[in-house]
Image (tube, one colour):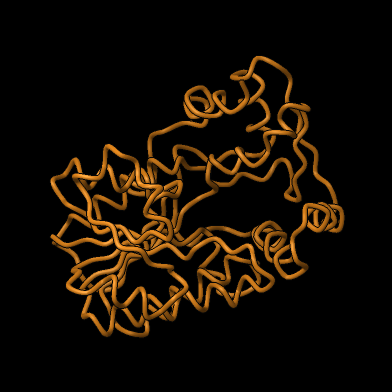
Length: 290
């Protein structure tokens, strides 16, 4: 089976690549910087240099591919939704021009809203575009990545996290490794067609208060979390160097998923994955804090 993987160096892609290799597949990796490929993978994968925002490069890189794992690249630009649109154009062109049979798309909880969820609106646009071209597609609606905590190393060292969401509002948290395992299962399963949505909710819904308690136990020191105003969070993003539209898009991912938002997919045996936040903190986060 010829499978292409985009952003193979990302939080999910690096695990998915190895899962496919273990399954006996030689995946084709679309990489902006092929020299970042780990040495131990070189004999087991095919690497093509491609930027997922460049339509012609993506089309050229996915010839003779039967299935693709598509990730809209993370934007750091002045207009993140425009960047998502560029990525959408690239994947839809590749699928239609190369007759790619199946797509597994890394989307997010909140994409079902279609509008009003900040940068997640860009993922919703990709979902809609893939649906419209009629390809067999599975949208993985992923919960909040554990790895987002790696962006808060300084705050964790100081002992206080600041968020825009209510502290007692539960949401799904998930390990990227678990998303990769779900993606590999879907990619390697020939017995599906049509359009599917598959939530990846992690092992349990957690509030930010829950997260602070888990972090305090696993890190061995008090970690508190406080809710700050939307304006204060926006100001932090701007101070960190984000362009205004990017800051608005990041903030919108929080403001758009509160006030009674409920994911379209329920938590079931099919949408629940095993890795707990406690085990991930113990195995991964502590390494970044030492």
